Length: 257
Image (cartoon, rainbow, N blue to C red):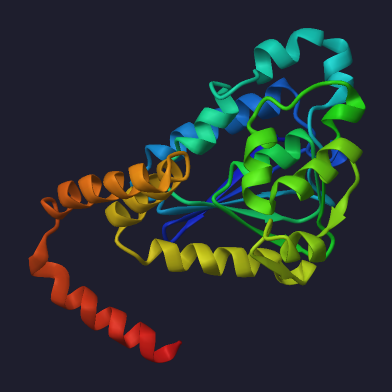
């Protein structure tokens, strides 16, 4: 049985972490499969958007503690810590937008995996927790910096310092997830959102994702300069002969919304 499954249809790739018996906890095999899978998807012109979810009752329970006991060097080698970690690089440098469909618990390293997605949908059964401090380690995939920027510093402090879980409803209220879905409709809604992305201009979608993700790391002034520079450069690559057809399609879409 493969520890990760990938299904592609109509420009959308569905990636499923497939260790349900271990709540999709990260061992060497799964972490390497995630890295390889997203590196391959990044190069696939046929893929315009990606949905990441977990098999079974959990999204990802974090690092597999049994594997860590058997292989103590796993954190410093196989999984890696810091912004150059293979998993972090594979997800964050993936040009296509990634929607996290959080179907159950997303804990510690699994929470960090969710935060590497571009936005999140959650089932009613989803729960989120950062237990780094309770386990006795520090985050290494960006959680200590990303979480506070998404939900606010004080809420992030409460989550990380207490190690307490929050449910899907609170996650939505705090702005961590965009939408809470019934468990049976989570994948359908995430895939529908991905299909809407895939229907856009692929070059513009990827360029806009990169611009937004890079811009939040800068001051507003510097980010606006970045937007102007990249916008001007991108404008030189646009085929304006196709613009009228795109505008007609856009008007039809707007009339239905």
